[in-house]
Image (cartoon, rainbow, N blue to C red; front, side, top):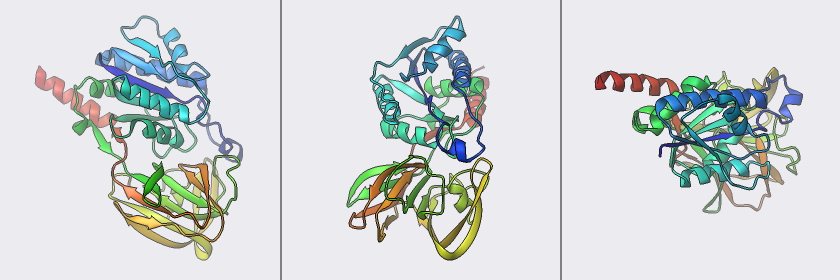
Length: 329
């Protein structure tokens, strides 16, 4: 049975950065509408079953109630929910185990990081932007996005033609991987995690980036204003901040510009390991969210890896699907 998983984060786009910036808000009601359109596209492509992540708002149930007649068998995963990012990780893991051949996410950078932790590179992702930091996911119309995901899930378009593999930043303690980031890994001089979202740059110490695009918003925009770096390129960036460096003004949030002083910038090559050194206790933020603290005695390093998630390219998939259909005729 051809199966697709949908992970819709009801909390995406509702953190502290909505208060300090002027960001748009994707309501959960709109997320229901997006999922409803996704289901129609999946149905048209021949997908037979959809698995939903269980969450507090009931986005999957809401989409099904408004959908009407459909040939799709829909199921909400039986799982305990904690309203934390671990829910997305567990849901992705369960969906792979249940035979899903494509995952669709509704969220931001943090949501997709959590999903990748659960599914790895086993199946392709279609990230649809509904979060605060939206460097990794893109804006897609649900109808055609669902059609494209369905074409890949059913095998009408092979993954090799439809997808590209993203980079990932991996954090190591000694030689053991302990965490990862899809876009940015920031080290700040805060002594505690506090509010998880990181938005102030006055306490930034170091920043590692898989991409640096000046048209994106968030910490990666700092690198984008210095050295634009495409997500498809085989390299990354490492920035070190401090007084007396090069002043860079960047859009770190919707309607929010800030100036950072960059003392040093280094281009990272794939599989390059960079040891972390600092003189005081620091916090580490992954894709915009503080998740751990570290002391100077911790033996940590960061590596840029080419083995990130496979990302479904909607436009390319639909073009390849049309070509395959014409050849069949």
